[in-house]
Length: 283
Length: 283
Image 1 (cartoon, each protein chain N blue to C red):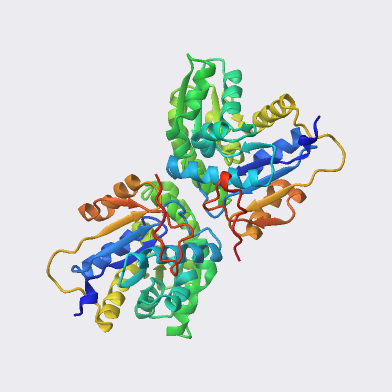
Image 2 (tube, chains in turn blue, brown):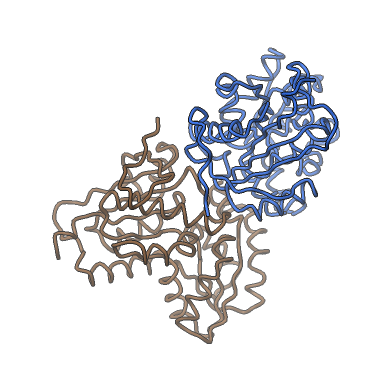
């Protein structure tokens, strides 16, 4: 355990969904300190183009680097799909996304190699899960289905609503017809819909939530790089958002409880790693 | 008719929804040239905070001013609600939003003074329609209902879907119970759902679409300021978007046909009217 391990882990998402990943990280690594950034002023990423998602992800990463994080977790499937490789190559710190761990868990869970993936339009269009699964299991058959209404349905609190069930039945019909035995929940909001998805897919289908696997992967990486934080004084977590801190705090406390204290507002537009300039203040 | 009239009309929205307003403007004022900006890299505005919506609206307006527009149309209810007054005071050109015209049409159409308004969460939270209606008719009773899922449902093409009907029934129940005789469609996407809304509200309820009223208001303003464009060479329209021009063009052509030709990509982050700097290029 080195001194460098005392620096926080940087983690970002397009909004609040990545808090499900943050929660899994802290359960797995309770001594670590997190610095979370939610890009709530530009949410969602999942309906935008790859180049815009890449730009936003680079800005979020540059902001977190300026806060001296020791590792970066991309807690957003769309950002991982479009910027994971670029950030891995460009940044001087370890970078962990949610797609590789999810693919690994799916391959481990599948007996037939017929694997379904659900995600945002952008994540599915990227083909990132398909590639990640077939790197591990070349003979796998991956069936991918975009579910663009799932995030708004979750955010509007309609998880148990009949409309959600109707929409889910329509989205999942092709995966049922393809007889998959695993479905990857390829968006950080989707674990909140797992009862609906499980009910439609039936008991023979395993659902994979990337958050737990991502936490395990991060633990391996930190250990391998000698970057684990030594137990001692309790870690201080920091939360930042690009839109209203009040709203972020409200949702954050629903998902993570009292861990979410003060939330800072930061604007990362145009923020570049090389410049080292602090983000602009906004009133 | 002055020479200044040859400059284009600037018009912006958070995305493509404002094209329904652009279409109404060109039907009413076929000699005018439009310069449309859709902030597709930061869409939606309707779930974000007032201060963020105001900042984005100022940046969009500054960009259009840099393109020498003679008047500004805010073709977005949320932007009008949070930035309409500020832009009216700050800009050296006439500014027309969609809320005042919609409120005027509603007051003209209502016999009972019981008026319903549906819109995004941010538009409804602003109270802007309530204020606008009661400025015209102080004894009016305004019942406002946020319908946050309507935009995603329209954008996913589920206009005639059973899930849309279920969600709409739930949203509109309070307005039915309040016995309104007019419903303002307070979001530029909602006219696309007018059959669903009309079916639920029943034949005694008139629906008000702000686009036509906004076009009439703009015509009055341009005439009053001697800014109408003289007939002659056909007008050239320009379209710009902050995210992928290809996607914008595709949806734009569905809504407005061949009028949408080349679409330029511009990034208006941090763009300020006073600076006069051109927007940054993006690859």
